[in-house]
Image 1 (tube, protein in one colour):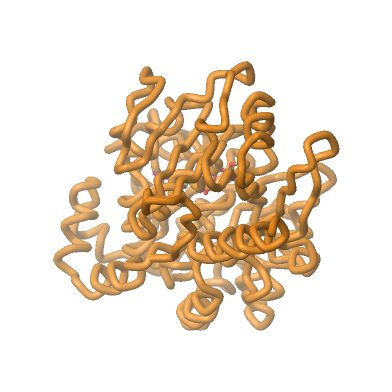
Image 2 (cartoon, helix red, strand yellow):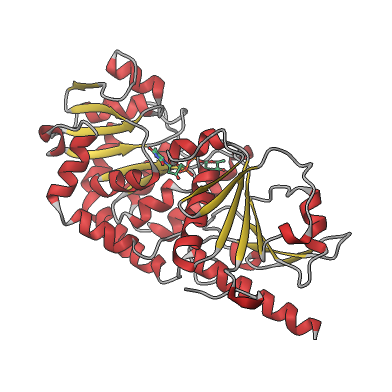
Length: 398
Ligand code: TRH
């Protein structure tokens, strides 16, 4: 357990995390993962402020979408319903995190300025493999009116970044699951995957609606051996519905040529990890599932969150430059999947080349997850940094 308490009397250190669900599941997915880990592994008294409880419930079913305040897995979850709240210093946590530069309620910031000592204030940024991240990680910025100092904290892939979210027991759990055929069989059977499908090459599919899914399905139909694509409900709905010739609802499945497409339920976060662990290849997206795919130690392809002026292509190339400089066919799949090279037309050759090099991708995926684990995990790194900031401020105050 990392200590960050500055409170007298040994009360648990407190931390408030502010999360706005801008789009999809990644914002709350990341904030929930971080909150849970800070509470479970570090004994931090976490309050998660989130503006969209309904989306939260999709990845964490115990959440009550109507409750303004609730305890979920030891974390206090508060519905963040607006900017107008009135706060006093007693409401302010020892550490305050804004996720993706969200605007914390002005009343909360005013209360932060009235605290003695002042809280540690961090802006947890988005993940990128680009080189500039190392230069910006932990940089301070001073509030123009109140003099509060906020530090930027960047996830990343090198020791000079904040690392990536990873629970302490994750690797052991994953290895045990992957070494236990009965556990895998039981998990997949519960999703409706038949024994015959389980024996096939298994791919999980999570991507944005603009991915060239239909073209990839066409290539997979011509694959030499059976291939099963497991798609959580709501993902690539049009392409999946067209393939099935029916609504893409859980339990729906169809086989054409070598390819079986099966819709599985959209599942709670821990089960989604198991899906990644159980598949031979994972097509993932955004910011959180791509990290989970890396910890799965299995080959993956990333559909990156689109940004204006194709900035996401720069981020994608930066990542591939670190992850797979030698894996030409895997890089071609990733680049084409994101339209960083022309995604139109036939996908047979891209898939054949990728599949031929799949064993090399598998070997690299295992090596890579061991290498990035050496950077420590984001929750521990963040607490260590918060502790250092707190000690520095205390020294300055003497
Ligand atoms: O949902 P996303 O597209 O979220 C995105 C990205 O984070 C993007 O960078 C961000 O700017 C944008 O949101 C606002 O993809 P991501 O990041 O992979 O998050 C998905 C979450 O959903 C992740 O925590 C895994 C979880 N999940 C489940 O819990 N069950 C499921 O069945 C699936 C498919 C995902």
